[in-house]
Image 1 (cartoon, helix red, strand yellow):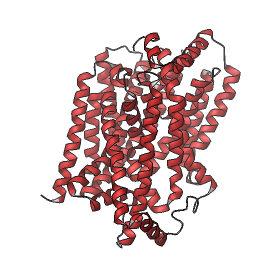
Image 2 (image 1 turned 180 degrees about the vertical axis):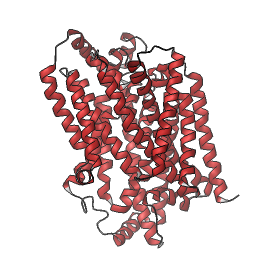
Image 3 (image 1 turned 45 degrees about the horizontal axis):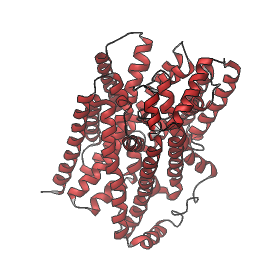
Image 4 (image 1 turned 30 degrees about the vertical axis):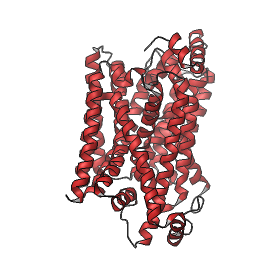
Length: 503
């Protein structure tokens, strides 16, 4: 068999496994709550690996290694910021959000939680939140489509469009039918594949380039400053990279995993598993880039696309069948994120826009069907955007990440930890944060100086607090609910199961 045949076999096995999980999840999905939140019954390991896999996407195996391959460890500050942000998110947000979304009328989406938490009878907060999710997730899903096209172009010699469509069709298929459950369990498989590949490739690569010392010597021949985490950077540039960590608090496709945990107490185990997975993954991605610089220097080779450094090394180092499964890990990273984002976007369309704006009741079966239709609509729009291939993967991800972090991050934190947040404060801050991130990110002179999440996040906080101080009206009902959420977030799993009705 040819090398290409081996790789095709590995890829086919992987894709069939994903479709099989989607079919299994389809048979277990009977209601909208099942489709959107898996019945709030995720084990901490599943939630942690699912959150990690859906978070990292093609950025981890393509975007980050590509950036470090070009610019050196100064690009690694993004990984530092993200790791710290993920730990803080699991530590503080996960248990409180799991508890509060349950006591706040069993909210199954971020917009419905904000509406129920603040008693917004006008439904404005929910609709605006749903629109923000639709806008930024369309860009986010598009980044996954771009990564898929680049992947097949680099690995199989196919055209960009053909590769993009293959990824889109398979991901849409298992997400469309299996919903949140399919997205979560495919994420587990994909997360394990990703971390295994990110350990295997740099480990073999180090042996190929003469160990750590050989790698360092070769890198210094290419660029003496490449191993200096400050060289070539500016204070604002490093702040911008670290600020990626702020985005975690407002990513709907990540925090929805917290809402789906069996209990708030599971967040502790989830944090240990999730952050451990992340440390291995980001360190592996960084070493992959450095090994790549050394290997190509030693062998006098040229890499045309820096974002394909992981793909190239996998194909050089391994037997075609093994390389095929390593390459499947890249596809896993891409598809895991797309599926998670499609589910959240679908929930925004059905739960937060269709039912609210059109004021129509529908059977559970009809709502699940509408959810699947939402997945399809957003997918088509994202594919059309990706056809242009006008931006790098990291640029698209960065833009969407900033939009969510600036719009929802401060709002979620204030809703969970500050009693006096008001409807007007939340709405003002959310809109201002989203607009600031969008406008700032669209102006090269501004976004090139400071990452747009920074001004967007802090403008949101300031306006939300100031407006809330003037408009907050005390409510005994809201106060009691806040106290219930605080109590529930601190209780052990056994106590939770005894005091809270199963959802």
